[in-house]
Image (cartoon, rainbow, N blue to C red; front, top):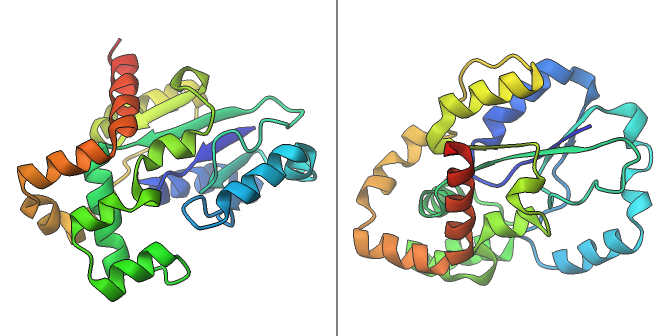
Length: 217
């Protein structure tokens, strides 16, 4: 079973289209988890206490799961699971997340409501506790070596080619979601602000660099 972790703003929506084209009805979309919403630690604890309930009914019905959840969610499956994920430079990911929520607010999320109501700057948004080290938190207890496949937005073509070699799943190209829409913001963020965002995401920077080293080895 392929377990595809969609970390926000890492081209996961475009990648979903590739998976949907291949798996069809055998693809399950799991977006109810909301790891960036309040109460997630409690929901995650309940999953760990009864892991068999997480996978009940899934193993025969689906061959792939894709969505916003922590990478170890489906580890209790009897079928072998192969985890995959895409990463993105943590500064660029944070800027894109900020820009997307400004355009398409998720008003269920209190951090997003705060962003809109208080008109937070990109630095203020990046400093919110749940907006820091997002990629690391989606990895859960897993290390990069525990994943069957990892790709990066910055090496999109090479990563897609490697995904095809590993899985046999046909791929063409995968544009970064909304790149044209938030391109102006990315270009306008100063070096000082980028440095601030980077410092707020030290664990994500370390994770990202570790994965880049693995991929270039």
